[in-house]
Amino acid sequence: MNRETVVTEALDLLDEVGLDTVSTRRLAKRLGVEQPSLYYHFRTKKDLLAAMAAAAMAPHATAPLPSPEDDWREWFLENSRSFRRTLLMRRDGARLHAGTTPTGDLDRIRHKLAFLVASGVPEKDAQMAMLAAGRYTVGCVLEEQADADPGRGSGSDAGSEGELPADVPVIDPEAAFEAGLALLLDGLTQHTTGASTG
Figure 1 (cartoon, rainbow, N blue to C red):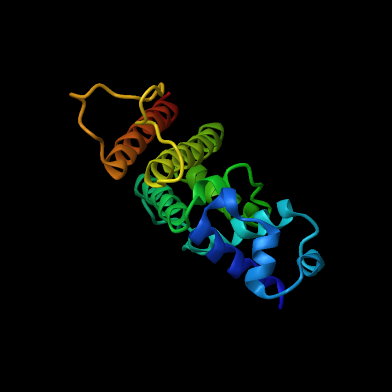
Figure 2 (figure 1 turned 60 degrees about the vertical axis):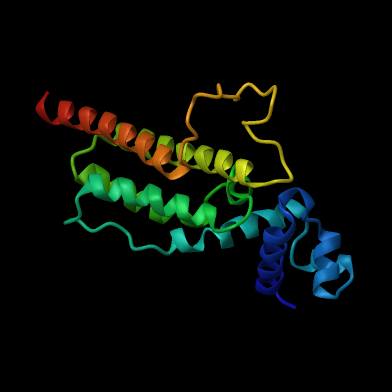
């Protein structure tokens, strides 16, 4: 048993039972070891969850970085879409990711910000746009996964503040995500155009 095996099995357990039910006791049983054996690789459950979050983000974290010739608007959209797809690959993927610190991803983040700035986006706007897009994406996926999980309440439950009138159509999560993302990009584009012409 090594660290990678533990993380892989922990992510498979996550997909089966959901984040609320993942425990070191259940993971140890799944691996056929005693629970204290896990502490050789991870001192706390928080450490394990951080490693799981990092591993779960691998598809997005290994996606190609932008090149100077790329259109920054198209890249901005696709970067957020890639992030969303990756979060959706795991049950409770957004909850697992929320609150983690991307320590292993800082060089990639710097590269992305530098690309936006080199494309004419003001540095402060680039930083805030990346932050806003990331949090927007996590929030959208949190709602989508909560609605899809039969074991947890959703915004459509009777009595919740998110309840919609009966005549309001159900919104497709991907369409809603794309609409909000387009609004974020429109706002950023206006700031960029204003900066370049002012």
